[in-house]
Length: 219
Length: 224
Figure 1 (cartoon, each protein chain N blue to C red):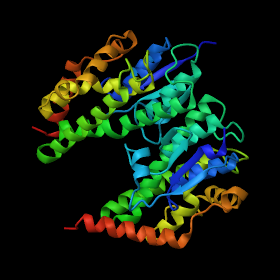
Figure 2 (figure 1 turned 30 degrees about the horizontal axis):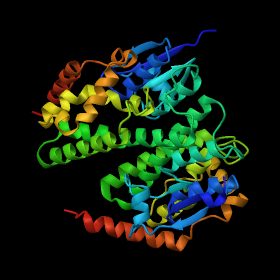
Figure 3 (figure 1 turned 90 degrees about the vertical axis):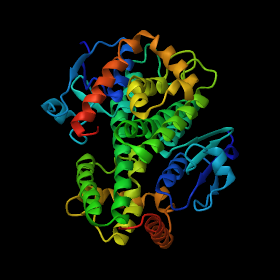
């Protein structure tokens, strides 16, 4: 019996993008369903009753919520190719630690850059850049965080790159000036087909941010 | 793997640090315990966890790692006796989901103890709702792990010992025994487990610690 895989998602969500990349890396066929977050589908509310958020991976009718948990699930179930987590327990703990770090630092600081002004915005920019610099350090001389190939941390982090035009425009800074190694890493990731075909254009995401800002009344 | 190899840097009253101790003891792994004064962080801690500067930190040989739930997975993958996580990937995903929610709930309950007014009411209400969902999760089982203590029991362990102290200090009730009889039963089983009952934090110190943290919070956040 064939696997039935559905992804409940919202196109600009960096968390949803993580799953798109993981599924593409593994060559898994899935049905992509776009959610209207102002009018959530009955399926979404049923599959994620606690948080009512995307992304939700639905595998043969069973939901897996929280993007990093779902990526690990994909890695464990479809373990025949493209392992995302290393096999060594210590290396796995380090990959989980840095993916967790991305979750703790990047989204909120990034969001504050395009929603706040003045001192709050400056503080967010500093936090964001400091986080990227720490990640650059962790990357070191490796091609990817996963070593020679895309790994768990790469998948966790690269989606935020699609939001950079938004961060840079509203924050009035250029990431490449502060963190050139980071940008070099991001560009290498974008060369990978499973990544580039899973991610929206920075321009499209930027337009989305402009739109949201208007809607929530930030001029 | 020599037992001298394993060190745990922790704080006596930390609920998340205690999880790691319980896991090591359940698996029969010997370790050296190093107490950290979190009000006066040591150079060792800053060196071992420069990113977050927090306990617990597990050191195994030359390797050090932080974040309690991540440490639990490392422990489970390294020492195979007394498995903590379920075997099946879907059950593992569920366990990880609820463990993450457990940490969010603990933070919410802590905030409900510290904050005041509308903010406190909001956080308290959310915490109560999540607790009722956890009641549904454990219904019919002795432990979240089934017949034995598992990863999720360790993740929820703070409910047994730390939450009652927070409820008392915050004059609040997050866990209603009438609405959550299964969790109340689970508490008793958990606290009576031979490994757990000899490994619980001292209540009086927990109380003074909470008061100190609350004072600290209000001295840096001026009310207007």
